[in-house]
Image (tube, rainbow, N blue to C red; front, side):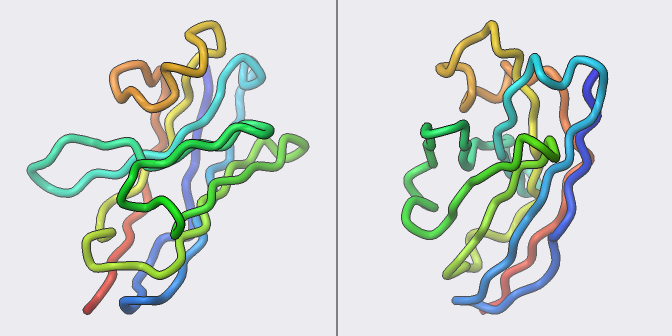
Length: 125
């Protein structure tokens, strides 16, 4: 089992920045890769971005504004969110995907094996 704990959410103004963290723990944590997702009420949870060594991939609406990174020594992933827009308001989740599923699974919601509890981000106009 893998336990994910997000932190760093809060409120920001349009154009501001926030940095989210996702701390992963568990006996089998090394068997998983971590991606970022977000969800607003009434909508499906959507992929945001992922970092893994030299591989990064983002949804188009955040590309150039969000930067995903990680520290393997701490089993922690980060999402630096810059130039925030009101449309970024959501609850942000990190999700653990088993490595055997391959990189192609990293942006697919139903491939996530474990979810964190989420952290809320509110961007005011």
